[in-house]
Length: 241
Ligand SMILES: NC(=O)c1ccc[n+]([C@@H]2O[C@H](COP(=O)([O-])OP(=O)(O)OC[C@H]3O[C@@H](n4cnc5c(N)ncnc54)[C@H](OP(=O)(O)O)[C@@H]3O)[C@@H](O)[C@H]2O)c1
Image (cartoon, rainbow, N blue to C red; front, side, top):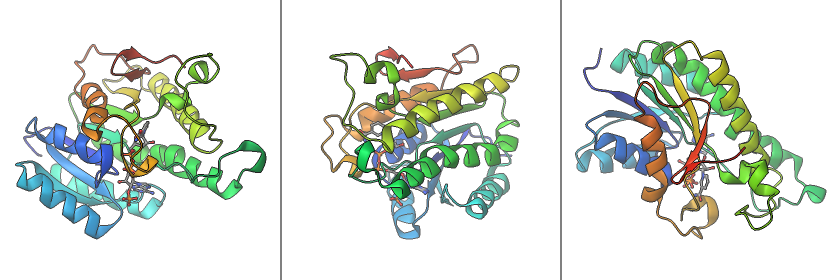
């Protein structure tokens, strides 16, 4: 068993996921860099190690059963448990997102990665999380998945996006279901919105840095034992469903 707190961040080779890995690593934690592309993964691991982080590469495609099972086996072999899982990997499903002209393949792809992928990874990692004294799960959602914000005049909503936005609404609902099932355990699971950050996901149009976006995930990853579960949070506090 590892002496350090052990975290796994999916989609950690770049963007907000990389900064979450860097932030958790700066706490002295051992951080698994979950990423599907070997070159990008190893480059991130090297960069994190150069910054003093105890980083290790975890080959991981969240849409692939065998890849996710192998990732769990790797973490088990290396650390014997998992303390924190950050389900950060996500995609938009591409630019054409008007509901009336939707590309159904893009909708399916967004749900497969942003929702089914989170369930797949979470369930594979749960046996390892159950061995932790204070397990935490953070699902990277978005306020564009907030139906309240989407339907409140003047609230920040994001563009019409029939693949991306509902996939995050779905993810929020899934987060609540996990929290209900895990209510009598020590596992805390919450959804987070990083704000509009400049990353590949939005062609770097975001107004916040990925590091700023990582802060809420780091906060939810380090919740005390009496912290919230089944919630949805941004830097300023709870986000309405
Ligand atoms: N940026 C924002 O303004 C914003 C706002 C709200 C929420 N978010 C959420 O924050 C999270 C991170 O987004 P980001 O902005 O940092 O985007 P990003 O820079 O595009 O990074 C996305 C990460 O997810 C990985 N990924 C995608 N599909 C994957 C798969 N099937 N298996 C494993 N990894 C996969 C990507 O890997 P590759 O390099 O291999 O593609 C990449 O590492 C996402 O869940 C996103 O929806 C972002």
